[in-house]
Amino acid sequence: LRGLAAELTTPGALTPGDTCPDNAISTADGYVLVDFEGAAYRPLAWDAAYLRVPWPSCWCCWRLPPAVAERALDRWRAVVAPAVPAVTGPRFAADLDRATVGWAVLTTAWFLPAVLEAGDPRPDDPARHPLVPTRRALLQHRLALAASLDTPVLPALRELAARVHAATTREWGDHPLELAAAFRGS
Image (tube, rainbow, N blue to C red; front, side, top):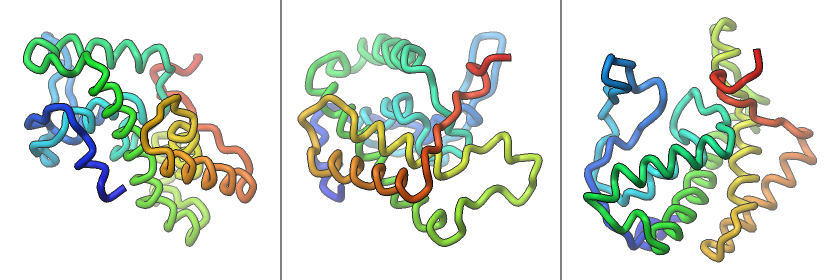
């Protein structure tokens, strides 16, 4: 995991670094990102993987329907490709797989200790409970995603994700991550 960034081969750029839904506002011209505290020069795959994981560093990291995530990623590529044509190539696809696995494993390391120590901590304010997914659901979703990617990259991390996913399922039961509110039935 520590060497993952060095394995990313496609170009980097100055990126926002935290393109969570709650970091954008709706305007008459469309959505505008307003939070740049995580901005840095990094491989573009890190930001593109936000659509696959989804939103790995966000509190509002609900699941996206796979077709929606793929359409969003296709749109992202179409917008970025004129400036960085490499985002449409096979090397970028491999980097995107690496970044997806990387985010899944990295955020497991962030959140698993609190779940093991506190059970599955919820926000202090009960009114926020429906707004924030449980960490168990979030972890199981990300681990399953990393384990199931049909890619030859990072086999040891994908195997680790599969083993940790199986262990959490045995220990906690199955905790599916709900769809983002915009995609839930009424």
